[in-house]
Amino acid sequence: MWKWIQRQSSPKIFYQTCTSLTPWFFWPFIGFLLVGLYWALIVSPADYQQGDGYRIIFIHVPSAILSMMVYAIMAIAGGIGLIWQIKMAEVVAKVSAPIGAAFTIIALVSGAVWGKPMWGAWWVWDARLTSELILLFLYLAYISLNNAFDNPRTAAKASSILAIVGLVNLPIIHYSVKWWNTLHQGYSVGTGGLKDPDMQIALALMFVASIFLYALLVAIKAKTEVLIREQNSRWVQDEVSGASL
Amino acid sequence: MTKRQNRMLLVALLVFGVFSAGYLGIKAFNENLLYFYTPSDIANGKVPTGKSFRVGGLVEKGSVKRQDMTVSFVVTDNNESVEVKYEGILPDLFREGQGVVTSGSLTSKCSRNWFGRQCKYIFLATDVLAKHDENYMPPEVAAALKITAEKE
Image (cartoon, rainbow over all chains, first blue to last red; front, top):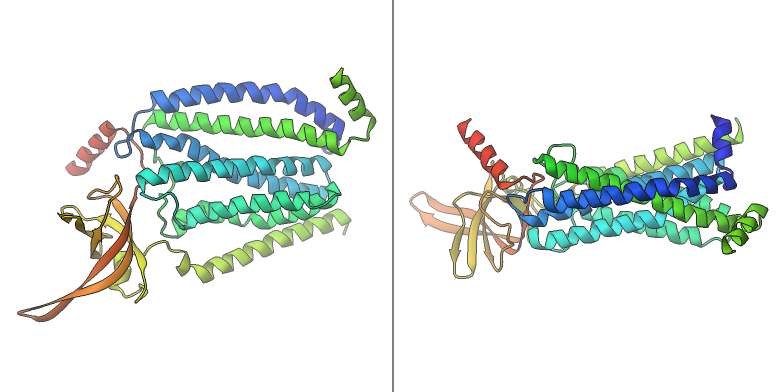
């Protein structure tokens, strides 16, 4: 097992794994996205209170879950990089940050667009919205700290510690609607809040599509990051000159 | 202890320290993190006096009265309730039996009757937001659920 991990974490093997996995992430993403959008926009019935407006949930909830999931992956990969000094874990952590930040922005913006017609406000400073905004700031801090060092190993060390410190925000986001009075409603997922099976299927499809999108983006961005880090090695020069032919 | 175990311990300590700090922080600021107070809080005198705050709860059925641009309704948490007066545009989702969060300040209206001077609180709202719950369903399911609820 240890041997296998070490082999996988050599930059060259990791690069090749990413290349071969890319189509396995791309096509399922397209498939789940198209079927998911069809299920979300056409098959699912309208809501008894919000009409068609509730359908923004099918973008909002997957992005919000991914924004937290990607952060957890980033912090765990950063921790693995710190403890076992696996360079490819540092790469995964680094390239995850902008993707997670993008999911956070999507969650915040789609939430604002949903909040204006339903609540009557684009933004309120309740615990759920504020903690999600802090998550965005954590991502931005991670990205800027990572870019502040010339040496990628030092950068990974400093930013991984930041990512692990920020982990404390994840349970706060998740439990904010339970611990405190918030304008944001409680959990719909896992509590049977979506009463119609078609709504549940649509949300599940969109969630799986988001996971494949994340995996796809990590695979593509990690390849670039590996090429930059290993630019002086022989195989990268072969790879790049071969690609340009 | 190897170097790796040393690093593992440091990361574990970091996680432990951060989570304990977070726990203590949340405990200390618990009150400030509430987005709104409930009508029970008003009845128990837990609300800040002399400054504006938010009250949330359900709009009591049959309590909405409109007069020109002014609307008054009763916000309840099924335990205590408070009368709210508001002048302005209400969100689309505002309806009787639904959740609302209003911000404003508390005044009291006193009246003299046979029993002497009686005062009750009136919440003057400057802002009304609708709060919806976590349930989404087609109208038919909502109607069916209502029928079962009425049978019980």
